[in-house]
Amino acid sequence: MNAISELYSAPRSSLKRKLSRKRAETKDATQADEPQEAPKVLGPYANQDKWRIVVKSGDKRKSLVFDTVQQAETAKGNLLASFDDSAKLTVDDLLTQFVEHKRQRGCIDRSLLNARSIIMRVLPKLNRSAHMSPEKAEALYLDATSKYAVASHAMGLRFVKAMYRFAVKKNLVEKNPFEEVQSIGRANKGKLQLRTDEAKRLTDFLTERAAIGEWRALALLTQLFLGLRSSEVLRLKKRDLDCDASVIVVDGTKTKNAKRRLALDAPIVKELLRKRAASMKPEALLFSLNGSTVLAVTCLHKALTKYCQQADLPIVCPHSLRGLHSSLAVQAGASSSYVARALGHGSDEVTKRHYISQSAMDSARSARVSEALAGNLDGLIATLLALSPAQRDQVCSAIGYRR
Image (cartoon, rainbow, N blue to C red; front, side, top):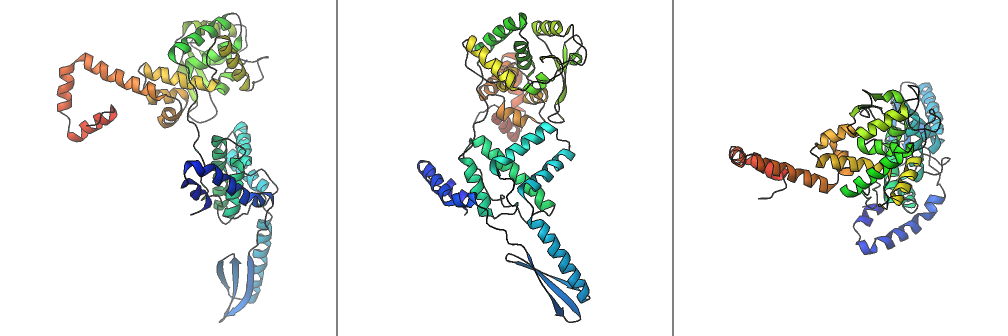
């Protein structure tokens, strides 16, 4: 059992002490890099009528047999040269190749920069050797847990593991030193969401501010009614208002599912969007200072904080508006798979885990049962009686009933 696994078996009351003691034990390992022993090539040795060389790396040995001593000597020289290049591989070299690999697979520059910064949470020293022992990898992660929140260092570990899996596949390193390292702690899921009455108050307040020309309020209204990401809202152009602003075309770039057409059923918001876009050119950004520069998402975060304070509401972040949109949609009868498509998710698993509140799922389920009962109780009973025992168990499980 490695050191991380031992932490999981510890009582909660002693976890903090064990973490502190473990960090103290590994402090020297994170401050200095022990040299990585380069593989050795032994030989050539006579092997009956052929010649053999032996490649030794740690506890592993591998023999290579050649017809002549000249072939064995040439192979030995080539191997030593390649081992020398491999030993010089730094974290920066490996990170550069990994980022380029993701670029070739279609990742945009913003995502690549984000991936690089996430990896550097665990591997902050780019000039260190990319070759390391599992103990060193464990020490580096433990050091990151003292600097970042659970969600941040856990994500860093996931990205670093992915980078080293790429390195193993490309034969840049022999093995993934982070493979057995386990994340510590449990990250909070979801973000604080406004309740229905609070959402109505926020909507009324944002509408008032948008009506007097505050475009940030209109951007937040659009995000709430359509469940968009902040980056998607800030990239909307005039030409994305289709069918007289009744349809919003989202040319998302985060994933292949992000490109979508969404119906906007809020008359006031449609009118405000048409009014703002009236004098703009087709390619002009709807929410920008000059119509061409995409603003950072922090501008919406700061604006929503200010509006929540002014409206005497709990302070939430713009991304939570996606969760609020999802919860309200499910309560109104939309399926989780439909909401997932509207949010630009490939499946509804992420949607249900991070965006739709459990109370919204329970309310929607109860509403569907009540609607069925109020419609035709006798018909419902007849239908249930016609089901097989396995199908009845499935129905009971779906509505949360245990027999």
